[in-house]
Image (cartoon, rainbow, N blue to C red; front, side, top):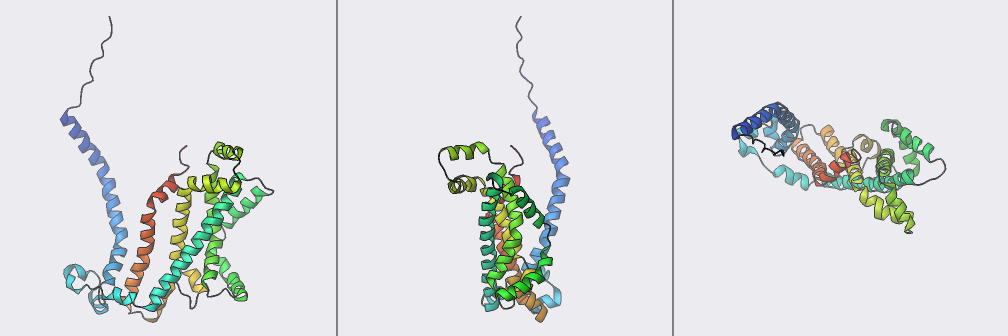
Length: 295
């Protein structure tokens, strides 16, 4: 006798609905907690935005939540004033120059050094890489006073170039460490095949390493850009007339404590730029975080 495969019984519609309800019930507490946590994190951002569209007098009397009870008090005049404020607009341009400039330096030098530490043989490679790793534990604050003295002698104090070089110097150890570990995960056979075909190291780097390492490089660029854009302590130390946006906002807060109609919109614009950068490169950021987790 031959065995006849019996058809598997199908789940009834009632069972399917019950399973869906059970899954929803199990996930609902976690999802609700995440939603609540996300809303709590958004409260300061929403508060800054609503404050930025309120006249200073209205905010001083009742606070930003009065927008919900009396929407007519909201106005875009504050943003018009900020965009016509030379100090704020110049600070935004200066911040963009610093953030983009040091990010490009960190990416280029970090990628070249990461490739060298990963795939090139040279004397003292492992010891030099250990030295790079050791630089990761050096606090940034410890170098402010020595670099301040050095910048005075080199005429780099209160210049965009000086701030860019400082951020690049402290961003390179992490960049080299991150990219070296990512490049090591690239299959060796690909590089050997390229070398057999006569490709130079520069060509291998440009045609193979950079395209394959794009997720890690994009993640590094996002980290470096956000860190530099939001920096305050380095800008306060090395900038006097060349002020990034964080220093410009801090100066207004210190000198004119009630000047909220200028501080709030400038702060929101400063917040909006890194958010746009993050969402624009979010796909590469996620790929960079997951890179190397699976083979």
